[in-house]
Image (cartoon, rainbow over all chains, first blue to last red; front, side):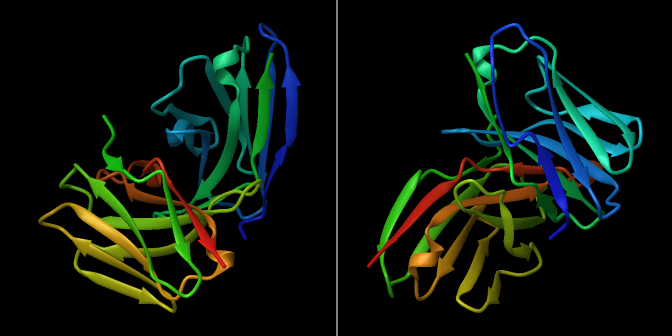
Length: 111
Length: 114
């Protein structure tokens, strides 16, 4: 267990509102990731970080931004939520050895 | 472009029988593969992995087979138990090693019936 927490665990919001999801880790892992899980698509990488203040885009980054000001925290922001961003969001951490450790997920509903 | 594919969205197996979950990939540069298991309302957890220098890796009831020429791997669960009911994802690391990124398949939902 990599000691990863996500907050909130559930959120319902309205189209056009900003939303920030938080991921916190206690294992001092260098890499952090945000994924979304949708039926028929599996886990798709949104953004990832390879160190404090070092982030890059994944395959489905449009409409999302991230920030990592401390090793332990990785924030995912939806600047203006849309219904297509209704999903389950997972944070993960990783080391140099390919295995990733996942948080419990955040279920986001955009009405 | 889906580089890792799991063509069976779901699978139902009787308790005690063998479960076989399949995964195909298109990128010949992939040299390591992982299987993750996911229960509802939880995050995925690592299950088993295999390096391309092997064609088989076994861990208890779980065995992963790799056929490099066919770009195919499979996860065998023997014997299947009700607690194995979950979604299974195969994954492959970015061949460039960038930030230990993984590419996941779409997942197969396994239901083990009594």
